[in-house]
Length: 498
Image (tube, rainbow, N blue to C red; front, side, top):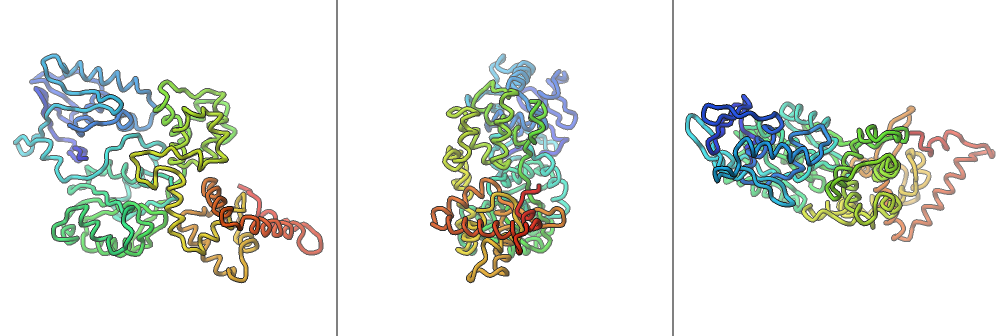
């Protein structure tokens, strides 16, 4: 997919009898300016940027109303106003067509004035980027996207880190869209998900970018590279990135990974979960809709059930769904896809079986993003046998736990405390454990979805009962300690004080 988003704001576009001055936000029909509202102009610009391509209704809403929850009827009203202003169809010329179940498309030929000459849009578009069409708006990420957009051109190399399903690719692509205008030689996505061998990393980049003379061709370019899904190729990606930053001084790189690359000059941006409302906010629909996890859930339900509106009697169920799914965008989207079959109450009741529930994947997504289980399988299958065993064993902790508690339950003759500490640190780097600091103490915590996954693996291994007994014995010792007195310090370490 190509786009005109890299156009300077002073560009002049021509289609039919009209001249569109982007900087002045002015459309002329000959010498006569067309009267058109601001939102309609914004919609027109997006459609012209994608001339010849279908733009989904969700993307139009996200681009034109980036900070608001807007009904589709608002979009239809402005599209109708655009068509009237352009005389769409009256003289036999069509400009904007509706593609059923997909969106809208600007179908008239568009030209850009370049150094006094007219150049077709196809020429302007060529070799500017390879970003995919975004079919849905990005919800709840304005702050982190804005931070990345501001920092990336200056810092040059940033890595977006987070667990499976947190939305790293979505955020990275949104950042790339917004930076199209900044990079003269465009923005380019290189997805390493399908690459298994480290030796293929550089060849895959060269092939994706169609570099005739290899990576040396990047030396003079002012461009942004998005290296997506680097976690299983860390060492080779690290080496390549460090070399590129030296050889191509105008290149910027945004990587996504479930753990940092640990490369020279790397700035790590951890991607948080979407915000989930606290129980105290359940008195008002407006207040609950202020939380991004709920916004995403409601928007995805509305995509399946037009006219869906959140009611006060729904707030507890929606809040519980979002909380149990850890505010993970992928899990929330998959849950919303089940709304037709289960309704809200049924969906809430089935959360204990979340991996059986969240199986209606997105057919257009990569296989590892089609279901929640496949996303976690991707991480789990790349762990060493020892890391897999520790992850499973730690799943017996229902709440946050300290390192001492983990040692008390997991360590044994084969897995000494020092070795266990190393493994837990690696699991935290890989975003499979969260690390929390508070009251002068470090605690580890699972996401609910990750713990459920690890418990299933533990049960299938036949060791669930063994680790449950270890956990019970440790709790018993922690409670009574020596001399029959309760050891409050250890008990507090096992409790979820957050």
